[in-house]
Length: 442
Ligand code: ATP
Ligand code: MG
Image (tube, rainbow, N blue to C red; front, side):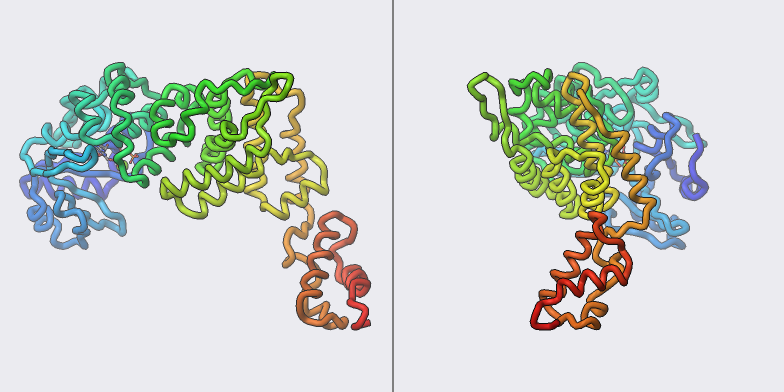
């Protein structure tokens, strides 16, 4: 177990002052798994004012001091040191009503959510692992600390966290824990939306298709619009899966970028509302991409997702039925309109959509699309108006009046360059522009 020098230094400083200090929680779990921890949390039997006294020579962050957390700034990084504490009450199923500092680390570990998150370690003291977190990690089991039902009733966010940790670390949720997660899931409705969203994002970027199917009761609780998709028969010979299973396959089938995963999760959410059956008994979903985009916007707004992320997801969902073809002109136009990274995401989304139907697709142009995209990107492209070899000043110099006609002319030149009807060369563009001069200016 290798801790960073600054973390070891803080632990040593506390120990020298006569206190016990441990690394605790996620960092211990990650180190055992051989992963790089995101951050290092320390816990100690020193009281907050004692921690402050021990680190009086450092810059301190005291925002969490009421709950026992003192941030110690070391080489520009904040290391959080928290007094052992226990908590209780939880009358609102999300916040403890009270927090009390305690002398024994076992009491601190007992308030934590899962056994794999309830371990502490110090080079001097070794492991504090009263709930068997190491053994559970070895057996790849996610297990609630204590009585699962009670633990999820205390804080329903733990339900979503459980699915998230299980997906991210490939753990199997112990039966009693999983049953309690499902049984208590309605309590998630009382959680702050941003807390739900933050855990949901971590879950869906890590989830496999099987995870999304297994944790459907939790996902549909977080996003109720997904619920009617479960078991929904699309009445379409190309789709052997029900709508939710298809959605799970597409979501797990795109790379783990958040906007792309969210777009995949929501790409068909409008299908239920747009479903019609024709005389032959075949299902249709006319305009479902627009309906899905509208619902995606509502859902992400409700979950308080950042605006730029929402816009990206809505764009991808709204375009997912505009099937891309590996031909220069249309692909150039898409590249100009969307930019490289969004176009790559759209290709990935359409690829996963095509492969998420339960039958192998008849045609799949994905490799050609990526090849052509690479070719186009290597060329001297004129993707936006500012890449055009002439600008407004050049047009004014040949007699264009400033104003609307000038803008229209630039747009038209750009469009013809994109379609390869004109080279992006100043002389050629000025000649073409001269033909567009309003008659009264010739
Ligand atoms: P990550 O790598 O995502 O940061 P983490 O385990 O560090 O994972 P945090 O949310 O940073 O998760 O929380 C740090 C620790 O605090 C957890 O490992 C767990 O012991 C405890 N914890 C956090 N949230 C809860 C909760 N809602 N209920 C109980 N314990 C919690
Ligand atoms: Mg953490």
